[in-house]
Length: 195
Image (tube, rainbow, N blue to C red; front, top):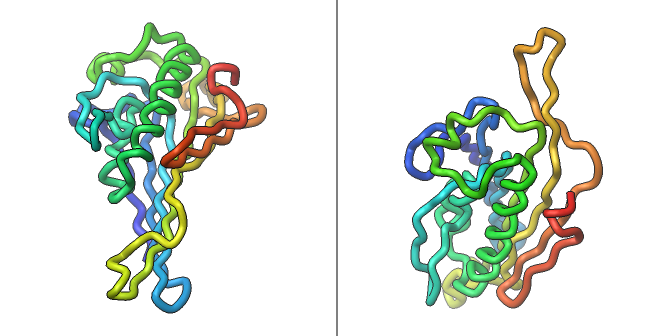
């Protein structure tokens, strides 16, 4: 089963700016072996650092991707552990700061203000991915069969207008930075602030 969802708004219902496009979510579910279910969700889009209320996750509060202008990853990724969210929160904060600096924004913006911002010359594009392998055996109660993680990549993109000057799109140039978040650590191949 494959489900594709397009997100056009920030967490509070304010539309993302037209030039930023949407955040696309692709979820897949398939039986990969007897008593095994693989589930994956991938989200892609431009990072738009916005203020977002925190929601509790374990002993800490997190925005679950909403501060990046993405939909609530807690809803997208479902049953991720509090420790995984804690480490994701550290990466999310770094990504927001890097995106604001790349676009020339003075930090995170209120969603309504971000919606009306003019297109920046540069931005960050992120792909966020989580795949789980679960047991479907009744005695395992849906337990994970391998450690949980969130991974993906970050690319610096540049604004390109068509010949008429009326259409704008963002294209990547250069190498991207990969990241991998687990319940115990956060790793990336390159600091997003240096892209």
